[in-house]
Length: 265
Image 1 (tube, helix red, strand yellow):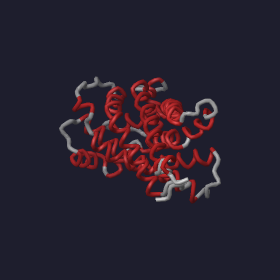
Image 2: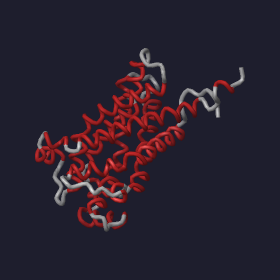
Image 3: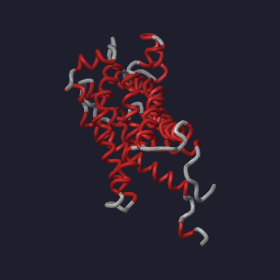
Image 4: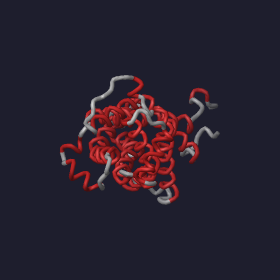
């Protein structure tokens, strides 16, 4: 592997995204479960087994989701925008990558939510129940809200931290510190903007007779769109900060695998 590449390869980008996602699931899965309970108006079950209900499925799904967000963002930047990038193009690339990743995250989160509500259901049984009740399209209930949420998340994970780092670089020379600061700011932005879409998605997927996107939003009302904001803000801010840091470390290792002190002069 070359010691001085400009960008990671497509396969390397895929694995960077996958391992970034895995690091997040290990830390933040209980917060996802707590957020889902609160958005449905249910009491949280304070048991480790309940808080990590569906964690394996979450990891198996979230790894390809973040892998898609990183690799597709870079593919769009390289092959559609031909690396003639500005901030607007980078934002659009990461937003589109997030929408594509929702093809995985929407059905997986739906099944996880079903399992969390009906603890006796296994993974395959939950899928069979959902298809039997709603048909194949039932696996994609809440897709529009999920796609918008994932697009925002992808922007705040892939693109916005880099812009923030450029802005704060003159005031913060330490790379790890700037990674953390940019992740905290990006996570805060992403949480606030995406919260209504996440709430709509959760309510649609947990309803016995789910309504459409706009009907659900109208039924909830503005204030209820931000239900679970506190627990989710902790989760998303932590996720984006952690994943941004892991992503940067992996990119640095791939592009500069040999420490400078050991490189030949």
